[in-house]
Length: 137
Image (cartoon, rainbow, N blue to C red; front, side, top):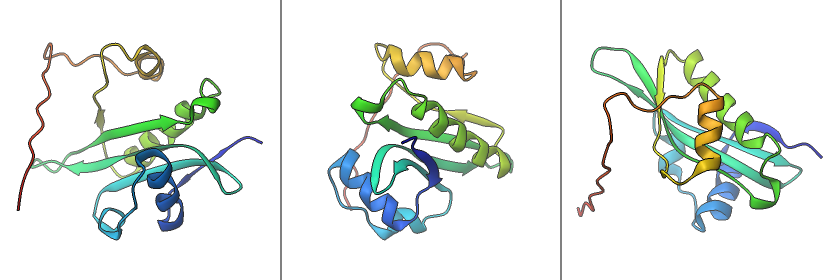
């Protein structure tokens, strides 16, 4: 059965977060403005997901940030990742986004191949370094 790609409602979000993050999904994410999540599913089985944000910029333009795209290992190389990425990009473009960015590991050749095949190019500002901060409230 070919998986269908849909925008995740709370039910599908809960299943995807459980499967790919081994965590429970909260309502805060799904209710936050600008969140985008898509799932690839057949019946009640999830094969992949993509999630990120539609970000409005101070100049009133907007862009997409793809935080994660993942396909179950047994279903890779079947076009599911491409369709998830296509749905994410199309939805963002329809909402006015003109660019999209993401980060991936330098050695993640499968992901890099997908992104390049879909028209992505390396950032023109040169090598980048990612920093993570733990914030305590």
